[in-house]
Length: 311
Image (cartoon, rainbow, N blue to C red):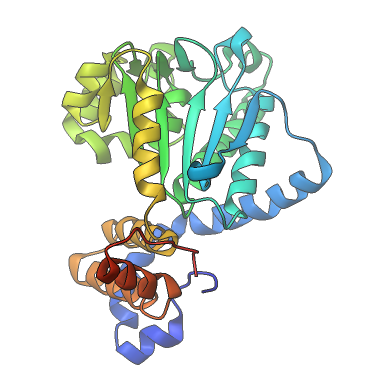
């Protein structure tokens, strides 16, 4: 099966083209993601990836699970120009990798996920440079959010400012009890600028998000679970194990179905209910003639584990 597109022709044939227009509000970020992909292809060709972000493809029974590992211990994984370039580079690789089924975004630095923006580097920028950098950060997180495959943020220790905004861009968040999360930007007389003011209220509700952003208050792993900010809170040091357990569960499922499920959920939430149902229908129809669907039915009948190939 080729690229997943909701073709205009198929929508016209089913008589839903007009109603699906509302679902295209999600495409506000699509053009930006397309531009990101184009620029990133040039980066992949012309520039090596910075060592502060590493990509690991797991093997054997975990084949299909990809880890993006943040590794800048001297700055607590603060996001500067090099780390941002590394993120863009590796997210671009994943977007072109048909074998990737699920992504873990994790830290190799003990007791920290990401401390946010690199304020030391930021102080050396003028207003125009800061604006450009934050725009680039926002588009990178939007690209992360728009990856076709499920993404899981693994949070141990601090996830503050841009670090939390990065985690909010993932589909699922797993934290340890020692995690500390917050958006402290108002303490610096600015606001979250890489999606925090939009993603946080959609996750925890408007009133709670306003309190957290207005006050800059930090929350623990357990409180984050109560607020709905994370999906699971594991004992300290065990967030990665819990995330890998979930990733392995996801990795067993049909790869094409995972992509279509993510598309249906994300696009449907940006549309009215009637249009969203049509988006779901179109995504479902695209799976009917796949080899994987037939394999799933055969495996069920034969009481065996299915072997999916993404076809």
